[in-house]
Image (cartoon, rainbow, N blue to C red):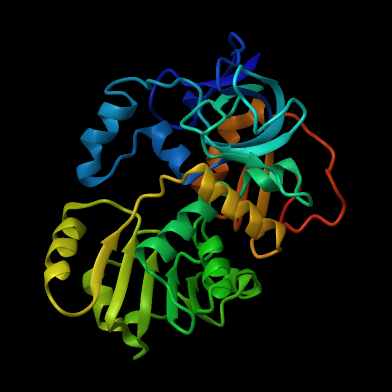
Length: 340
């Protein structure tokens, strides 16, 4: 089969297409013919070994000290089950599925455990749309609900509201009854408002910490602020949520856990199949929808990474492994660009 392969850490050019041996489904596993896989910021970090701060050594130990342990990238996917291993009962050959995996999604075939974060696709999503959801939606759900303990009626500010996690955080916070303020570039105002933000701040011209407003949650999806800067904009019981591990926020978490006042918190999204099924239900209900900026064929995967790194796209960059027809008319995704 064809697969994207990297044997070195580095720039997008390290990604090449190779013929590799096709995987086989073992006991409790699914063999999925992949149709689409997004290039996420997580994929970019893994490709470049870009593990910031104190995460550098753990990242290298987990993913390779000098060369990638896992040669085929891709952590999210959507496709069709081609074979099942012994003992699999929740899925059948021919099922359309989507989900997340540790690696190897950017290939024609992928093997995943039937108990991993994989779910049946919702009816009105095509493969590309479904593949664009798990990364941001599961992360936003776990951070807002389980770490931030979001409540209806609260005021929530989302930094990086047009980004991969931010877009879903806006939708989920609105769905959970919060009043949402999105911080993004002015060019993204229409998109973020359309996703559910009641208020918008252009990060280039306005500092949210100086506008006199207070929030119950500040969700920093892009590591663009920091607890110290955001503290004055939080209520006395407010929570600052970060996705980025650093020594500074670990110390802040420790100190704010024993002192009165706003809390600094960090979260990691290790979603389960249960979480993905919950996200699937929200997709089915029309609560969550992806934004797709570009589609790039698997053979041009390096271009997909370049496009992501350029930072000029409001939406997911999808690698199309095998072009498929829409499964049902009335697709909910907002389409920003045709195939690149």
